Each structure stands twice: as C-alpha cells, then as structure tokens.
Image (cartoon, rainbow, N blue to C red; front, side):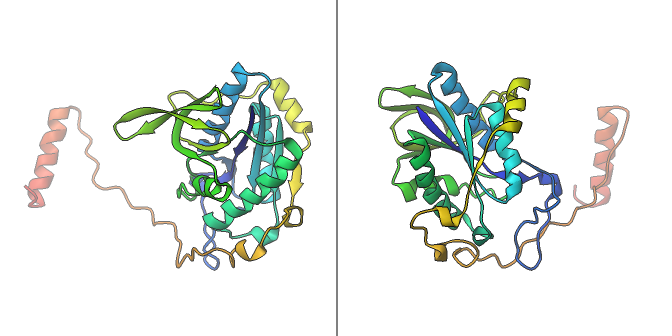
Length: 267
C-alpha cells in the first residue's frame, strides 16, 4: 500500500502572534511543532506498515523552508520519503487555495512515487481549527473521504476505518483511492528511534515550487486567490483571575463561598 500523509508545521500555541496588517500568523522566530492531529495520521499509516512491511509512507507539507524540520521529524518516526512544496506566491493561502495547491502537488508527487492508495490527514490544524483542508483535497481529487477516523487497517480493495461519531464509534469500509482525516485515538503516537533520527538528518527532502506543478492556476493561490477575507484577527486579552477561595477544609470553603455570594446579592 502506498500512503501519503499530509502534515503541517504549526506555531506552538502558547506563542501565537498575529500580523496586524495582513491578519496572518507570524511564524518567523516562533517555536513550531508538527500539528498533533497530523501526528495521529502518521501513526495510523505506521500501524498499517507494521502489518505490511511493503507499504510505503510519503509525507508532504506546504509551507516555508523551515517546515523541513517537521518533515525530518516525520521521517524519524515512520515516513520513508518527504516532499515540501514552498513558494512565495502561495503565501497567505486560505483553506480553499491551500487544498488546491496540495491537490496539484499530490499529482506531481504521484509522478515520482506512484499512485497513492490512501491520503491521510489530521482532522484539523491547531492554528486554524477549520477542519476544511483534508475534505477539500478529497473534493479536488474526486476521492471518497472518511473524517474523524481513529484507526485504519487494510482490507481487500480498500480500508476498514474505525471512526468517532456522536453516539459512539462506527466501522466504515471505503474503497481506495481515498482520503481519511484522523482525530485523537486512545493511544499515543510512537517515538522515533535513535537509528531513524540519525537517518532523518541525512535524508534528502525534495522541494517543489509553483513552477514544478503542471497546470496550476496561480490566480487561485495565495492571498489574491483566497476567497476568505479576514477582517480582523487578534489575541484575546488575558483575563485576571477572580476570587480564589483558600480554606483548610471543603466545608470551610463552601461557607466562605456562600458568604461571598450572599454579599454580592447573588443568593
């Protein structure tokens, strides 16, 4: 099985800064991590490879050159090869433009790596929380999709997906090629081994630009090609803590709380 995992390098959520002019995230100089939900997607692919050593895992990211570090981390964990698509004309792309660029990039990578049986994505990126890019890639490619997956396993002609639902979990079969988005399962992703870490440092990561993508329409890319217009973005001001009740026993704390509520004429 040939699996592509789309990953994104995101800012550490404790260090988010927003450019007041462009209303986009400031990434320069901000600590970055692999989007956690993409890590679950990579782990799902790795578990398939555990059972089928012939399976190949390719990771793909769209972003600035610094995203190379996130791709090397993925190679250290489980990926066999990595690709980065990066170009200034892609800067400021919203989810629709991003998914369009990635769909064109996938077509290019398939020329080099062969047809992908499945594309795995995290359900959403923690810096945007839109959960739109994965499903939009599926629409661009015309693939069936399953969202909120917890686990995936091979079965004849497709995949067997355990997915999260409002009233419990569901098991769904889907034919390949397909796209699956993953949410947090009951287990944690694996850690890289020392051997894989050393190999990841030397691994060659192929970088692609807009010029490498056949038939791409640049009017659909970047800020100008993004139909989503952000009027204003801001970091909410930090609120001061309210009254903290510190008493030796629960009964004393409850009595103190009752006094405060009574004094405020709430009770």
